[in-house]
Image 1 (cartoon, one colour):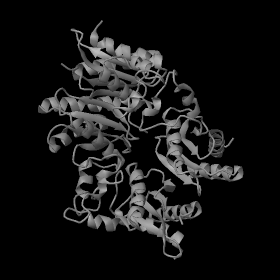
Image 2 (cartoon, helix red, strand yellow; image 1 turned 135 degrees about the vertical axis):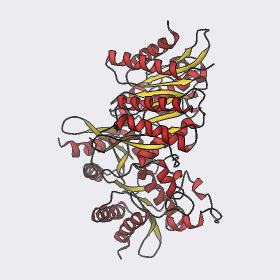
Image 3 (cartoon, chains in turn yellow, purple, brown, orange; image 1 turned 90 degrees about the vertical axis):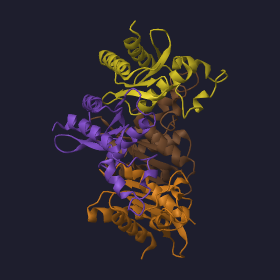
Image 4 (cartoon, chains in turn purple, brown, orange, green; image 1 turned 180 degrees about the vertical axis):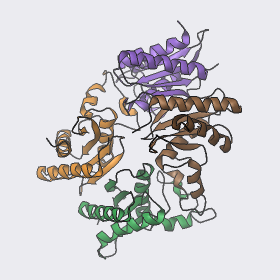
Length: 135
Length: 135
Length: 135
Length: 135
């Protein structure tokens, strides 16, 4: 069971609208259950460097089925996962990546957002998640 | 002057609809004038391996401002550009990538499509181009 | 709007002269608005390892439109962008990379300098910026 | 014994002037005896994809101390060096890369040019070589 393109585009649309409402310029990526890019949008004049980060956040959230910020809490110096960012051709472990679940609570993909503060990135990602989870 | 997200999404939508009409499952990528990914859609059950190919086709078309198939005609064994695919972290030089121009004829981005025969890939890409160029 | 080769070469020349004046051996890179290398100079006997660092500094400054050292302040352990260096095929987030603006204040590229202390790298980069911004 | 920055910049300048004279837009790279980038210039509006190719041509010419086109003659299907482009993070083996020698005939670096037909790329590279070899 994986996120459909229709669901992924709904997540992108909701995250895009939330970004416009907040006045931020985001890169927004959605990956499927296999962590493969399914839909993507880069807002005009969003940071160039955030393109790759948004995709890596979405992949990271699905690779480990948890929000990216949670992993970042474990990958600090002295933490149990210190250095995990070196795997999988590069992870991003600060907030902005969140898994997406279906009605049964099973993870079917993830969204990654980058372009502003990590708090705003997370807020926009959350809007994308809600569009699919419908809560 | 670069393609806007609105234009890129119009290209994706048109290419997607063309794919549905043709009964093919495509990965569709649009890059901006800087060859940076701007919008992307992967249809349900499209080939996994075509994800990267669609993005590389779009980039390749913008890197050299010509359809990917034109480059492929020059990169064959004995051709003047043999082996060019080894540059830029990998090019794809068979059909399916086409530059996108604005009203003044200036190239503002490119589309890349992968998921079926190269003829069908090109046809779907062309539908995306038309949505922006408005012909 | 992107930096021209003429402007980029003026930045390289000014940074080179500043380096000679300071008695340091630098690698100096200028990227355009798309973060693509536009001009580069490696002074005789400059550190080999600084070649890649100078280019990554210039790219990093343009990727996020801020001096590289500012990003480094946020990417420390416990910081909000910890581990951001793993994105975009590698960032460099210590001082020495600075965005370059045009007369209207729009960012048109960036310079990256590496070869000595980060303070000296930054000073030389600043000389390059001034040559274009004309202050 | 390696090419100096002064020599490399003289090669870039001559190649740039030749390009202007021919009405072509080139990416021009010079590497030293260690195949490390020493000077680089990308002319305004030159093909984006040629940036990497120009650097790879210069490196390839120095890696094997012969013009890139000579290697391409040996790397065709059935040739003795078939597939050599897969080494060294990617080689470019069509014309446009030429070694640069000092007065004693010792190779001290190489130039790589990309942006137009391979014949024109080679002609511009040759102009750069002449500026250093002084013939």
